[in-house]
Length: 126
Picture 1 (cartoon, rainbow, N blue to C red):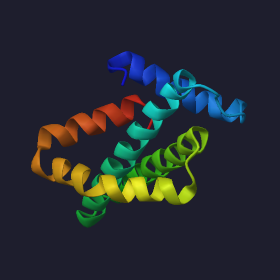
Picture 2: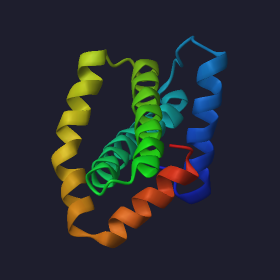
Picture 3: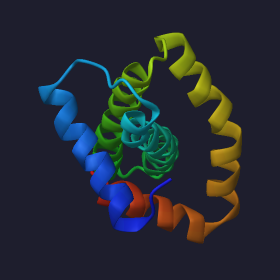
């Protein structure tokens, strides 16, 4: 998986390209940016959803609204990237459900992980 700026570039490239092209890539190499976008979007969906719940529970409506928008965008990107890879909607939903316990555990155990996830997702536009 690409690191740092190359990962951000891959995901930003995917988000832009998904609007312009609908034909799926044909080789494993062509799929790499989509796999990266898919994985990151799932993580961001979970992180933003968790932060949304916290903001909503604390009564911070404007922050909750921003996080809800970010979670919805991450969810949309996960489904689009999954579609490009060849996953069905059910498979994407299953992957999200499977990732939730692990990601939520990390988010709840570590303030540093939560902060890094928030920064990473913001940097990716998710």
